[in-house]
Figure 1: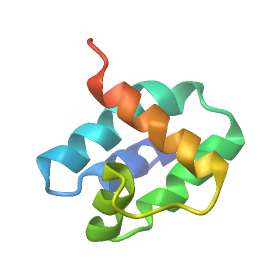
Figure 2: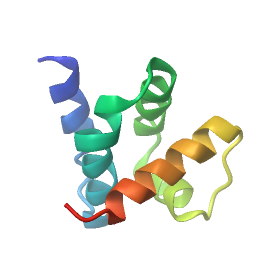
Figure 3: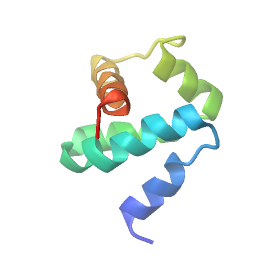
Figure 4: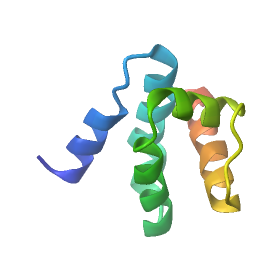
Length: 82
């Protein structure tokens, strides 16, 4: 299984909201991201679902500016028109 297929599988979280956020970013943003951003996305996918929802919805604070920027991008891709 190649890396993109593995990430696609990891983005399937079982909740519509998480799937929407993660899949849209993976399909568009991840493909054009630099290596640092890609690594941060992989780290986000390691969070459990409750933590990930909290981070994406702004209920849980994140430590670095880079992660905050990534979350902003993920949200932007989720609401972008196709």
